[in-house]
Amino acid sequence: MPKKDQAKPATTNTKQLPDAALELIAHRFRALSEPVRLKLLSALMQGEKNVTQLVEAAGTGQANVSKHLSVLKQAGMIATRRDGLATICAISDPAIFQLCEIMCAKLKAEHDERSKHLAGF
Amino acid sequence: MPKKDQAKPATTNTKQLPDAALELIAHRFRALSEPVRLKLLSALMQGEKNVTQLVEAAGTGQANVSKHLSVLKQAGMIATRRDGLATICAISDPAIFQLCEIMCAKLKAEHDERSKHLAGF
DNA sequence: ACTTTATATCACTATATAGCGATATAGCAA
DNA sequence: TTGCTATATCGCTATATAGTGATATAAAGT
Picture 1 (tube, rainbow over the protein chains, first blue to last red):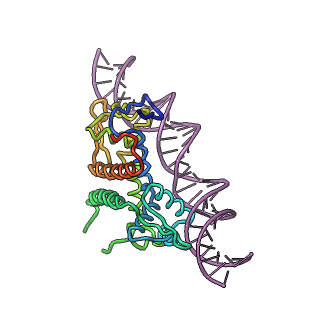
Picture 2 (cartoon, rainbow over the protein chains, first blue to last red; picture 1 turned 30 degrees about the horizontal axis):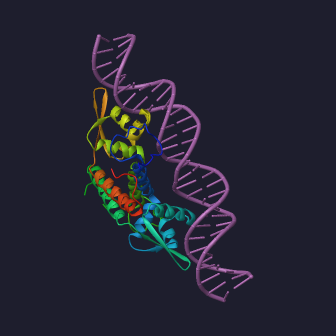
Picture 3 (cartoon, protein in one colour; picture 1 turned 90 degrees about the horizontal axis):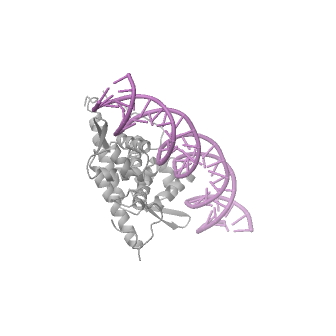
């Protein structure tokens, strides 16, 4: 039997992805929209790290890092396991590498274009 | 003459990308972290559209769409040109297609793994 | 038992921004 | 000019969340 959509019957959502999917995608991108979280992911790209190491890498408080890690975890980007007192974190989805590569390349291209008129070398 | 490093001498930014770059990248991802903006981009993937058409596609107010468009424009994801009364919008960076593809694939994989409702596309 | 260490969570403030209605600006037509 | 249309911007409220310090929980050693 057909499923019941839970909200708006009148929304002009003629084609494309359904609103629910857009919200999920937006939620994923939002997890990548914070400098501290990017720094955490950047640190994890070198390999597993425990929370203390990540606090040091992030340059912000432990409570804050813990919250950011839970955001990344909920977005399916990192996985954690307990090892004695430590919580070990690791990147759980290699797609993150691609996403960051693309975004970095984009930035680099724009940066190069912008610094054309500046550079003597 | 030697180049001068531009910012923070004290930040524990031992390696990796500098903080300024992380903020720029985060800013780009943040532009993609809103369902309405994703819907606008999704509509623009079919080709150029003016603001009125986008308002209809987005299903929210004109003032709101205008603000979202300016966010996308500032993030370098769309370009606009004036044509009489209309402002025509178009995707200006094909990298957006890649980013959304990757994120969608990620979602789809997780979704398939979990259950199987919420129609495909 | 108590202590120390590692991490998570709570309570709070401050800031950012999504959404809305109203108004302002820009371009065209009469 | 006036009027109409398309878009941008302003003023505002409400919500989300980044950051902090304090506290709670958990695991191991004493």
